[in-house]
View 1: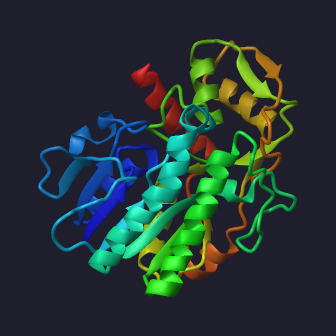
View 2: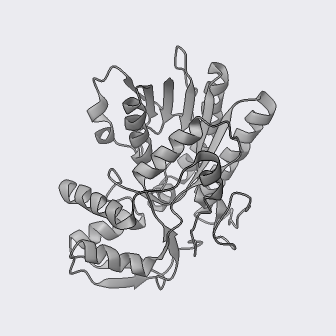
View 3: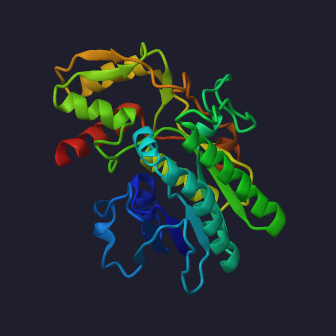
Length: 309
């Protein structure tokens, strides 16, 4: 297959590029490098199955030749990034999705949208399943990301219904692993960065809010399985093992042998109190569930951060 990955120089996108190439596919990585990095893909330069195009996908995308799949993974994805780039986040969710769908339609290719658990907002139900419509504040600071992804899902389904385009929608829950940025702003790199330097580990609120962490290799395998299934409705991919943030802070402190103290700061506006995916559909339709334990994945991630810091 010849596969386009927008946002392919990002954390998840670059791991997808690696995986597809290991599976003997051709990969065209498209990224404007706002939050992605060439360091994530430079090991692929010179590989005859890999092509990098620096391009902003909110503009028209032209790629000659046959294309079998378009995976739209371009977007700032951490609170720090989408608060820094609010308009770019909205544009890549709206215009970028439109342009990527247009490319898939032109090439008669499968289109996959990287959506997010953030479409559920600050959920009133737990675990979150795909039929839950969410509790999102459209005018809050996080709304730029939440609503961009909700709009992207709506546009993807419109192309599916109106143009009969073959589509996939993956709702990604908290994922971690090598190639996350140290200054990413998300809880995993934040805590590891602080712990490795014996700096205070900053917990927002009282730490009772929960997250569920999925290792990158598990997520990529689920995405690959979904690509080859004719399933147009959204599918949750994540690890249902739920954990309080305060307990996660102590786990990181323990795994890094850190002398860090744990300090508490005010909870950001609209920060979700719970995140736990219901992966019943993924188990049933994809025969997928996470394999990598949290401790195992964190040890690999901590080792990566030790080597780059």
